[in-house]
Image (cartoon, rainbow, N blue to C red):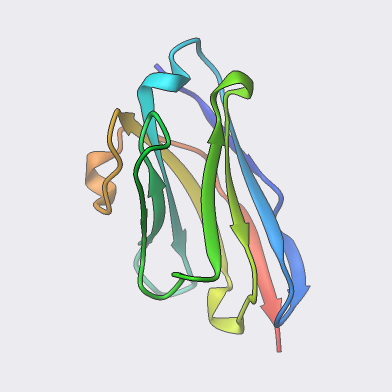
Length: 123
């Protein structure tokens, strides 16, 4: 069982940066891959990035490649999403999720979810 809590969201101007954190409970966090997803008003939840249990593999949506970086610190049971060069279209509620070992772009494959943190990018 893994419980996840996101933080770090906020209001930022276009071109700015934010760093989201996903704090996990449980002693087996290092066995889980972490994914970040986002959901804008009126839209479906979409994949943003994922990182494998060992951090050896990372995956990104095309829309964020080169701007966002996913990472993790297993000693601190925390995963991160560094977001640079933010655009108004990045505005959404951002969720982190966990699944065993390897990341996936498919939200249905993640059994554990946080409550989300709001990111708003003004133009």
